[in-house]
Image 1 (cartoon, rainbow, N blue to C red):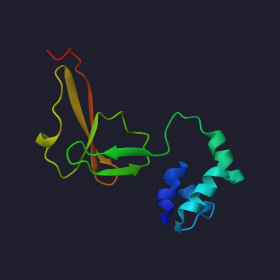
Image 2 (image 1 turned 90 degrees about the vertical axis):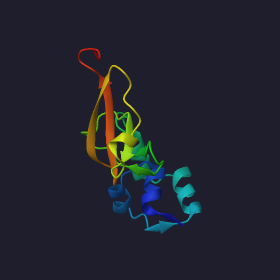
Image 3 (image 1 turned 135 degrees about the vertical axis):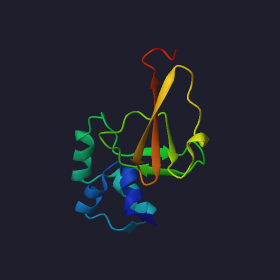
Image 4 (image 1 turned 120 degrees about the vertical axis):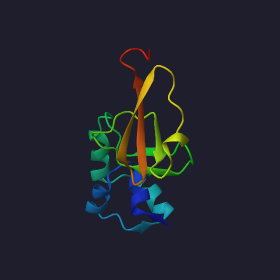
Length: 125
C-alpha cells in the first residue's frame, strides 16, 4: 500500500491537491500506476500548467548520516550546498572550501539545517 503523501510525491503534486481530488489515504501500486498512465482531467491540467521554475517536491539527504526525506521547497530557500540533520554538531558538516563563506538556515524540511556556501566578498583573502 502507498500512502497519500507518497502518491503525491510520485505524481509530483502538492498534498493539498491530492486531498482535494479524493486520493485515498492509502492506495495500491496498481491504482497509482493507473493514475500515472491515465491521468484524470485535473492531473493532466496540473501537469500542463507546470512551468518548471520551482519543483513541487525536493529530495533532502543529510550530508552527515544520509537520512532522507521529500519536502515541499519554500520560497525563502536559497540553493543549499548541503543539508544536515539539526542534531549534528557544526563540526560534523562537510568543511567549507577555501574562498567560500557559509550561511546556516534552520527549518528545512522536518529536521534539517540548510548550508549555503557562497563566494566570499573579498575572494576569501
